[in-house]
Each structure stands twice: as structure tokens, then as C-alpha cells.
Length: 406
Ligand SMILES: Cc1cc2nc3c(=O)[nH]c(=O)nc-3n(C[C@H](O)[C@H](O)[C@H](O)COP(=O)(O)OP(=O)(O)OC[C@H]3O[C@@H](n4cnc5c(N)ncnc54)[C@H](O)[C@@H]3O)c2cc1C
Image: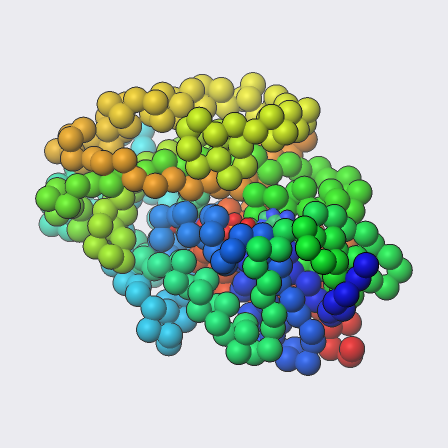
């Protein structure tokens, strides 16, 4: 039985769903909005299990949504943290080339960054790198001064506080279990009561494809979970890293490679790697879900991806099981780091969309349907870009829906 009627219902209380709710309640205060989150508080998955970096936009293909929304979004995120007194710091980072083969890619990153509108990018030699990060070693490095760090769990809490203050409703411990689209409404079943809404926005992260398929949508993509595991530098060795030290990323792979990140609380993380997780929300190595694995194996794109990426996949698994292999990858950037300097840290699971043809979706993907909009690929830098992603999703929705005239 339907006991609650809304104009807009958002599934998922991660940083993206919250940013969309924040924008709607700000621009359309008369709309009745509810956000449903299955956990007992907001921001419990990707949005609080990440590296906490405010990315600058140096990596992304010029003209892509990622490039545009990251550059605008990083400025908006810094401004938001400043305005609300949230911990953050614009500390800059270095991307370090450790062998000759990486030098053209480092140069290409500088070109990309400039094409994306970043200023202050600088290619430096080993001596200058030593002045900035005395313990890092490399042939050359790219300095990205606009990169920063933030606490995205705190950002989520603040978004939630503002949504409530602007009249929106957030219901936690409420998992969406089914959707039925009728002529002028969508009926949303949960593990508690049912809801009806004129419009639905699906921001369910690792489960966004499942939510979309509840309506019978024939999607070209499936979400693949990639776990990222971290080590922490022990406090007495955290002085090895001043700010952020990154490798030159492998262009065949959408992840950035293991790096060192100073957090807003002063600790230093090393990682994350990127191993295929055998369970969505599988934070530990032994986590396994028959349902998740069976649906992955039944998706043709999974086998095509495995055929193409098995070698890098095996390297990631090796680094997952062997601390020595993980440390060797880190020593390319920071030769002084030793196994005993690293204590096991946390982990996070990335929601990465995979196409039927076996390619990983690179750009952000928002798919509007009649009364629904599915947010199907918002990997990194979506935390950085969340405010601007929220605005973009609402503008996309406005093209299809009558949000204004109730
Ligand atoms: C290891 C790692 C490192 C990263 N580092 C960075 C970084 O440094 N900088 C950066 O900008 N980005 C980074 N990212 C990316 C960033 O964290 C994500 O892109 C962003 O958090 C995605 O937000 P989201 O709201 O889409 O997903 P989530 O935070 O996962 O939120 C989805 C929500 O939907 C809820 N949900 C799912 N199913 C249901 C259901 N049936 N009913 C109700 N609720 C449901 C979940 O409980 C969850 O709270 C990183 C990600 C990872 C994993």
C-alpha cells in the first residue's frame, strides 16, 4: 500500500544523491522531496571510503563531462568547505615519472591539464622535486598546485543538514526493493512502507544498475566493484610525505595507481590498488556473494574485460595478497619506504560501469528515462565534483520533466 506521495524521490544517500537533493531543495523549495538510504546514516559507502582528494581535473579528456565538472567542481568544493568551516587544504600534488617511458605521458598530462583550464602546472626536474617532496624520487614531475584534500564524510553530513533545513526529507535504514512505473507516478517499494513519486532519481552507487533494471530497463552496462586497499604510514614515518605523491597513470586502466595521500587529520595513506571485488560492498578480501558473482559472470562484457585486462588484474591481485609487492610499487615513488613503515589501513569499493563490449565506461553517465533518471557511472572524481554533478543532473532532469509547475 502506498502511504507517502512525493514529487521527487532520490535513491541513495551518498555524496551524489545528497548533492542532487541539495540542489533540488535549493532551487525548488515547494517540491516534496524524499531521499531513501538503506544504511542507518548517509555517506557510508564510496563517499566515506575514498582518498579524500579534491582532484584538480588534470587527468581527464578535454571536453569530457569529467574534465568540465571536475574543474568547476573542485573550486565549488573548496568554496563549500571554506564557507561551512569543514576541514580541507589546498596542498598541491606531484605526479612523478620514474622511468623514461613515462616522460611523454607526463607531458601529455600537462597538455590535458592546460586544455582543461588549469593554471600553475609546472614540469620540474629531480632537484626541484627534492625541494617539494624531499623523499620522493623520479626523473621529472608535474606540479599540480590546485589539488587539495577534504573529509568527504563531513561534506555528506553537511549536505544532509542543509537538505533538511531546506525542507527535504531523508529517510535512512530504508532500502528500495522494487519499482513500478505507472502513467503518472512511480511506485517505490522498500523494506518498510511504499512510496509514490512523480519523478525518481537513481543515485544508488554500487547498485545503480540493479535499481535501473527493477523497471525492466534493458541496460548496456553493469556495475563492476573494484576494491581499493590502503596501508597507513606509521606515525613516526609520516614525515616521508609532505602532501600528495602520485605515479603517472597507466592509460589502459581507469585508476590512478598506488599513491601517497596526506589526509586532513595529518595521517598518510598509501594506496589504493584496484582489485576485482567478489561482492558489491565487499570491503574485505574474503567477501564473496554468489548472487553478485553469478550476475557478473552472466554479463558478456565481464568476459570481454577479463580477456583484455587479465594481466593488469593479476598484478593487482598480487599486490593485494603480497605486502612486499605493494611496497615495491610504492618504492618506485618513495625508495625509503619499508614494509615495517606500513600498517594495514581501510578499503573502499569503486562502482565502475562496464559495457557489454567489455570496455569500462570512462566518463560520467546520467541516463534520463520518462519519469526516472539513472546515474550509472560516477566514479572518481565524483566526490570532488559532487556539487556541480548535482547541478548538472538537475538541469538534465529539467529538460525532460516539469519540475517547476507542480
Ligand atoms: C577507493 C576509492 C577512492 C576514491 N578517491 C576519491 C578521491 O580522492 N576524490 C574523489 O573525488 N573521488 C574519489 N573516489 C570516488 C568517490 O568516492 C565516488 O565517486 C563517490 O563517492 C560516488 O558517490 P555516490 O553517491 O555515487 O556513491 P555512494 O557513496 O556509494 O552512495 C550510494 C548510496 O546508495 C545507497 N544504496 C544502494 N542501494 C540502495 C537501495 N536499494 N536503497 C537505498 N539506498 C541504496 C548506498 O547505501 C549508498 O549510500 C574514490 C572512490 C573509491 C572507492
